Length: 176
Ligand code: HEC
Image (cartoon, rainbow, N blue to C red):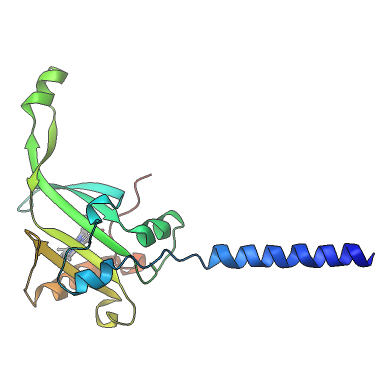
């Protein structure tokens, strides 16, 4: 009986240990947030994983992709809200070009593809303490790899993103 109790105690503590490890899983800091805050494009962001795509008409007139670092993807897949500190979400955009080559393959005019980079690369970096004044997010834009030095810009970013305060200021939903 004693042996059974001991075994039970051991397996119970194993369960607790495993549960603790799983629930406290935090992707390692990739330094992306620090680079962006320092006015630099984060290394490797072009290889981040895909969250979704969007098409904007009007003045923007582009096709865009939203990518996330490991912390972002992890939170999206677990539907964790608010996003944890260390989350970085990137928005890339390109001109929306019709493709004669693809059209001829399909035998009709129907194809549009991503052309040249357009409308900068935008980032949202989560740090609840550092960026408390703007909902816990740093907003940053890079044009041709250089940070946009428009002091009014981050405020207008935040003002518009407030529309989705109930989704932690993030518009894009995860495309499954
Ligand atoms: C007029 C409203 C508006 C302004 C201003 C704005 N955004 Fe957004 N942003 C959106 C919308 C809507 C989306 C989702 C659709 C899309 O990507 O076009 C989005 C998407 C994003 C995303 C992808 C994550 C998400 O929330 O979906 C990032 C990153 C981002 N914006 C950063 C910025 C930055 C940085 C600025 C300021 C330089 C900015 N935004 C200004 C409306 C805005």
